[in-house]
Image (cartoon, rainbow, N blue to C red; front, side, top):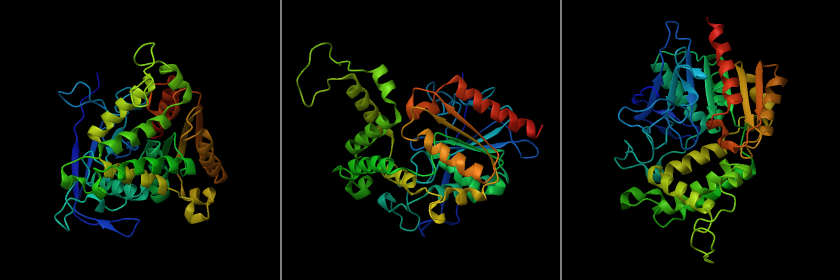
Length: 375
């Protein structure tokens, strides 16, 4: 049984300047903490979340049996990131729909719900906001910053924006930027949302509707890219949903994989915000620390002083091992201290969320070494 988690919220009245030139003020950040901060305040680990996750990283909520955090298999007492030794912090990003200020909240400057007027946020903006929250907690340096996928991009960005505040960075199933194919997937998903008649230019809240059709399609597209071909074939193959007879219909569900994707899409459309989806996928698209250095990743990562653990998975074609190796090469070019593990796992991009003994062992060993540094 998981330990109990308690959601918290922190208010920031002062304006946060954003990379776009806009700013946001009078905002809240939702967060959770697990474990105890030691007397030296040297055992803090920040965990950054991916697209559809939140600050609820580990544990469960009281009175809710099925409320485990999204990385509960990784973080907790005696687990790979051991909360008996580390003080773990999860923060919900600005613009999300899980407690932090986002498009569904009221703009203090207009008195109206932000909707489509919520400013565009970037990975760098999220890192600055996270740093403000850590300041309030009295944490001047992190033992580690950790994340998978988009969370890994945030972890990497931390080492560049606040190099003196990070001793270790754990970057899992991530990349130094998105490929054209990945941007294309994001754009198709966004078009599905914005062309939904219920989207109303992003101001659907005022109309009392939700663009569920667009959200369903966006989630279906995303889910396909998170799984490997092998996993899809193993789980579903060409199994028919209705037995052995074909319906010869262009609109009915015929195959189990269709049923699964529709289920995932329906579930997602019930809890995720459409404007948040647009914002977060755009933040993914924009992330590219090498852009300011003419595309030279080695120069971009020269600012990083942290030690690194990078992990990739062989069947992850959305964030392939090749992309992690680009980061590895750039760090080695700068003679940085790093470890790299390429896990032969069949699960595709979702592998970073799943239980794989080798993966968990790599992370556990790395955090053991961090704990011993200050022992």
